[in-house]
Image 1 (cartoon, each protein chain N blue to C red):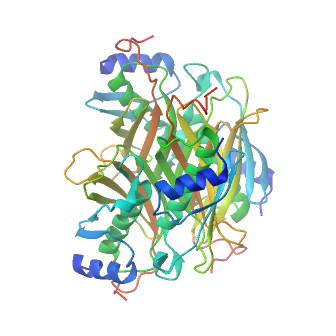
Image 2: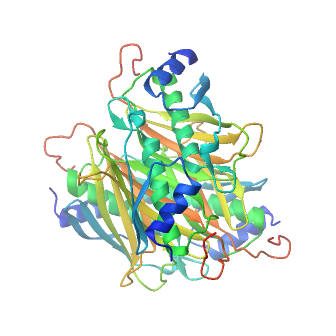
Image 3: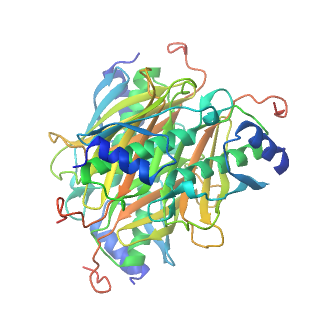
Length: 142
Length: 142
Length: 142
Length: 142
């Protein structure tokens, strides 16, 4: 399975627009972080919802790549986010993904989003990815 | 209720980062569009999921502002997206929101996302916003 | 493709516990109804949420069977419901499903739920079903 | 705050139709169980999706009552379920709810559903309840 550095290099090459950084990957999960820029704040000084959704999407994608290998054909099929608390404007956002299932054609994971250093989560995400039925030789489908 | 131009001006001032443009607002709905940039494509030449989520979020927000007035305190509480088809890489994305309910404290809407000029939708979103329970007298803008 | 009567007979045989009746099926959609019993009311005299979810699930399932044939292996993968208004305690509930996508392995549909004879919907559902990747030649019923 | 027995008695009186039993409540969570009856199986010998949704809804409701007191006016506003694995036909289903947020007007919780005695969950739910803004004296809001 790919290392954190390999996945980070893949992300940087394929998604140069993302500001998300890969902190950890493996054990059916991943942790990613995102520096909040001024242009990502909403009125009232809070991080905008789409920034949180993008970070959660990256966390899911990275966790799945860590599990099935670097498969660019994994595509998202659905995502549900619940916003729980106002994120701090001056802290990085951290997304912690745990995969709930990696099946033959579908992977499901949840992502907890935090303002770095704050215990209570700011949002919770559940997302699904469609994964190619035929995988690379190291993970043959049945 | 605010006009399309007033809401567009509010968005441009408060969310300068968004590329979404307001095409129409009113009648418990809104239409917004988004020019797809090269930096918003995923491997395979399709529009990234977070771009669609951001556009849907803006469509919901604009539709709600059109209904309750320009109330910066409306905040998203949840959003569910289902990705249906691969968006065209070379077409603008259009988000068409219809509000399903505008209650005392919660507004719910759905958004259909399209590649401009293509009939079949690329994604479907349902989102909820919390709206301030007591509105200022006719919701003056800030 | 199966007729309304064939699907109704299949439901009655395989899901004898459901109170849902199939009113219409076809054209990538379905309509089902449900007589509300006293034991399905919540405090305050409204239809309980799970009754609405069950009806929506049946509507989706029937619409999918109408599209791909009577395939018992279609299984739900996810469902999101938003409750919009209090259903009437003394009216049947009607679920109207439209499929948004019927792909190779995944079908997605939305369901509007109504108190019969009332225009405003009481709930909105989006649900996904996994469908068997290889269909038997023109999906014969079992 | 109400005890497990008080909440169980309230459920039995107000929702006589539910088969869910309250195992534990408190600490911003709840555990409920459900004996699977033959009439709740789907083709293939698995527990039907609506049974899981109903159990998750009860788990959420019980957890919220345990936190804010027995407030019949708490009503569900939305629920998302992801089905992960086929439940065993011959085991009870267990729902374990943890509340993610109990705000002034909205409570959000997640529920993990299991076949009793099996480690891997069969489904995951996130649900929201609207709670009355002014609570009864025995559960003052902060």
